[in-house]
Length: 276
Ligand code: PXL
Image (spheres, rainbow, N blue to C red):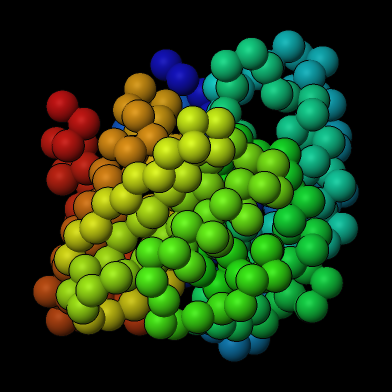
């Protein structure tokens, strides 16, 4: 069984980051170890959340794993709790990168043109440093614009997306995939670029009329799980998009669904079926 380590926060309630990555990656038949960056009472869209930063735990946990001869087929990072964690996460990549392993960075920090509330203006520059060491990055358009310095647009064409993808890949990763791309009403998806092959690809599916918190984490976790199950990047991104849409569809069908996340749990049978 492939083993990954996911480095992101534990939002104790809120259906995002590790409480999404663990069940999804496990359901896909891939072992998911965790390195929590912080413990929050909820995600940061709730008011009054608590946050215990765990920066000082990253290095000793990594050192114990190294001393015990433990390694990973992939490292997948998401929400980092502070700019101070960036050096530790970069050092972790250097220590655990090995022949054939994959480093996936979801540069979680912003959406809809705005940084998340816990981050200051220096954070995107720090997150860009994490991206330079990745094999694959999975930003949304807001994050891509903050990482590259290119303008954030809500109306755009394929040339703009291709320019953005090239600028993202120029940061260092071989592969960049932009989420939340739409070229026509009713369709939403992902466009990606392989810097080494010089090739673009895309996958579009239904654009459901709602946005939910944590769907980026559902998407990224599924993509990493699918890559570990041997799918190509194009197949992994398509499965991630389809499962995310299925989770949103089931949430919209649930009259008492919570506002803070999607009912990805009810779509797990669909995800598992798609693996066979
Ligand atoms: O879903 C991304 C995410 C992860 N973790 C925390 C967050 C967010 C988005 O706001 O607040 C703590």
